[in-house]
Length: 271
Image (cartoon, rainbow, N blue to C red; front, top):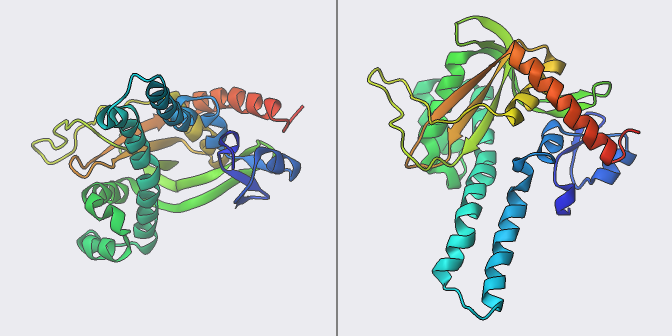
């Protein structure tokens, strides 16, 4: 698949592998919400940035100036490592959280379950995963996980991490959702307060998140939703939840509508 075709494509409500924009369009399918958003935001540029950094390093080498192995590493490794943690390890964290939730694992049985199901590459991330799972048990009353959303009329498709009844920051139970996001945290904020609760990592709300949650919320009838950031740095475990109320979801959906329409027009999905 080419860089331009990166993304997730749904046809008749099914996520289809080895799909391109053109094939999806010809089959009457719908690119996912995140695919449309990423095409217009910095999220869709991460791989391009890595490639540009590598090209820049080789241009320095070809110029005859010379570059050491350490300088080359500085040019490309930091960005690549960040993307590796957020995307590659993030997929494993999504998977293990889904298994924990669907199996209804009690907190006291967490470690034995984790060791049985977790891929060996994320065994050292158990603290962050455990915190995320504990957060889920405290803030989600009942829900479906990894639920495919597909609305032909609204032209919305995607897979929702958590969809059901959630508990808002004021303690009210409302229809809503949760989307897990994974980030490599570099600085330790002292995430535990004196009472044992977690402080913020400093992540803030973004238009990307409000668009995604707004689109999902439009299909599901949400009155609120959370983005939950999970640290993929084993030395700095923790989670941070960002709450989006109904007004923020509505605003996010309006912005998404413009982005999605532009994407569909440019790529020939609508005329």
